[in-house]
Length: 128
Image 1 (cartoon, helix red, strand yellow):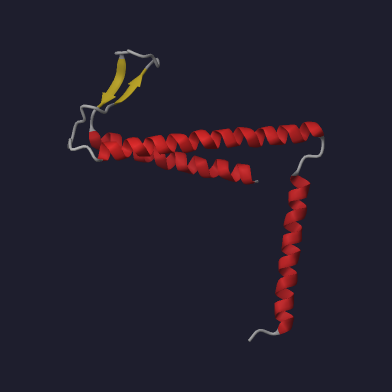
Image 2 (image 1 turned 120 degrees about the vertical axis):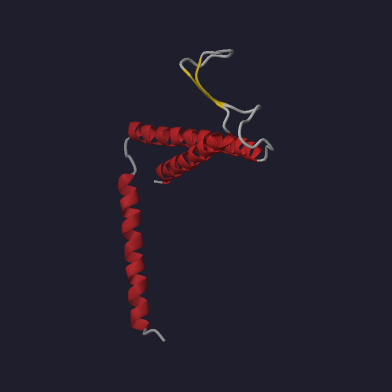
């Protein structure tokens, strides 16, 4: 059984820590109108980034699921990965065009992983 003095000491320590955290948050908030506008515009920009990242992750996960469920084992006919020098529709001047299923899957998994890391960073920026 805990000593009441120890329980009281722990709760005072928690109170002190919470008070310090709330004071540091208050100190971080900008004071002038211009600073506040910049602060909230930055938050808004990060929220927009987060929305785009989440949408891209979901899109890549959908594509990954479709590719992994295809019955083709090595080369895909319906899916390929391209690298071009200029992004144009109907551009047949591809620098690299990959049909290898395993390579495409690995690249998608890697991309999703990196985007999730970026999502976590942006979420932390929004919450700070």
